[in-house]
Amino acid sequence: MELLSPSAPIEGPGTALDHATVRVPTAAAGDAVADVLAAMRGVHFVSAAAVAVLDGDRLTGVATIEGLLGAPDGALLRDVMDPAPPVVSPATDQEEAAWQAVQRGEPGLAVVDEDGRFRGFLPPQTLVAVLLQEHREDMARLGGFLDSVDAARATSVESVTRRLWHRTPWLVVGLLGAMVSAGLMAAFEAQLDAVLAVAYFVPGIVYLADAVGTQTETLAIRGLSVGVGIRRVIVPESITGLLVGVVLGGLMAPVVALMTGDWRLAAAVAVAVFAASAIATLVALALPWLLNRFGMDPAFGSGPLATVLQDLLSIVIYLAAVTAFLG
Image 1 (spheres, one colour):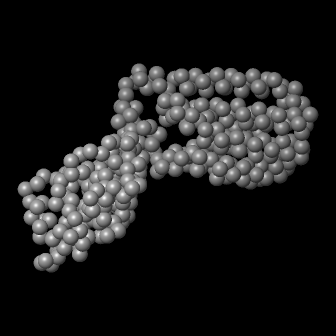
Image 2 (cartoon, rainbow, N blue to C red; image 1 turned 120 degrees about the horizontal axis):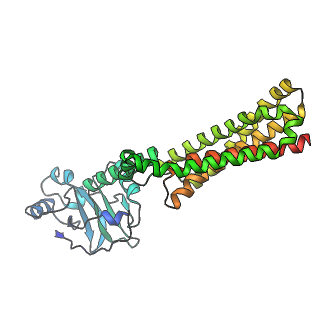
Image 3 (cartoon, rainbow, N blue to C red; image 1 turned 120 degrees about the vertical axis):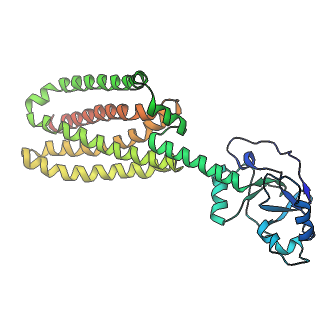
């Protein structure tokens, strides 16, 4: 049995090789179990949960300490080792490696490169630490869409001055958006004067767009917290937004027609609800991702900014539909 000297380079943050150690017991398949156990005494290992069975620098199996201690007298290492143990490549993501060990019930995982060479072992204490770290990050994303628990905690306990500084700019953007909305309504004053009922449905359309966007944003952040990227969410969520728009528009059309007796206005409302729902879904998916990419905290910015964009777009779409259907 020998103790390998550290030699493997680090290939990048968050990989299996980052956390692998070569300070583990190693032996050959033909070694006697009793000799392996005797050689382990008096040697300090980072982990002695398993013995890496090597042929030169190539991994041929893994024997757990439980298997060694339970082996009969005269047993060889090949008699108690797993000849096909689960392994991961050096570039495997740390969370994926940890979950593989948990799902397979392994005390650790060997790291083996594409040529079959043993690069180190992921000990159980490291796997637990990785899972804890990933859990903390997932909870931080779920609660505040931040990169770390420390950032989330700092945001939660910051001073009133810092809170004001972080929130006010986004709310000022919302205030400007409200002014633009008022300007848009004024630009369509003629249509509003001609058909007063047009104004009745502005709040409802704006509300529905905000509600659809909020649902999508919540689901997107929840997905990100468990490792589901925006690219995997955007297609099903976009389709869902379209279908929600169809359903809501279909429900509103007969109601508006009964209230106003004007099927043209009903058609305009239905089209506006459909389009606003679809666009609100895209806005709700894009904003958190964009803010995060530019290093800004989406916990403060995505809500106010998404709301003002969805409101403006909803009003523009509705008034454009009214112009198209009512002239």
